[in-house]
Image (cartoon, rainbow, N blue to C red; front, top):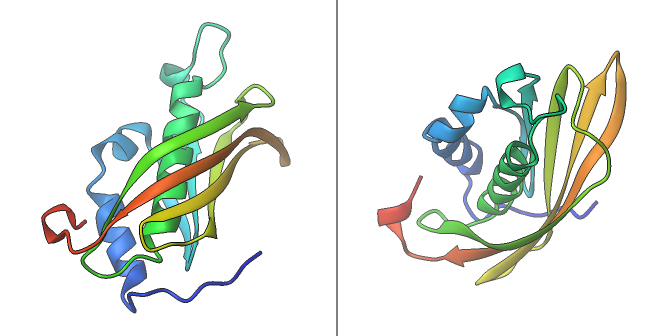
Length: 151
């Protein structure tokens, strides 16, 4: 796993502050459980009201927590007055999203001045066993000097 130096010494508090403002993640019951330079993990408990017709967590919900994990991984390496926005992602669903909880793991592959490439996985935990559910490759746009979008 690559190791990165954050451009903002206050990266962890910046990421936590921003995540706390995300009403979508609050609605999903998602919590940030790990923040390191270029790496973020978000955990979400199984909730029946977030399932699709077969009883699995809906794919849109799965990609939501993974989009945030990858986005915050990129944000952790950004300069203090920068913002990040998702430009695109490609996702593969490899197993049904079922279990007691899901964990989205976002990781920066290559940070850049204007574009950062990330990868991420969602795993499900069921009876103590971890199973890969989803994998994603994502491109984030870095918006420097954007205090109006900060947080």
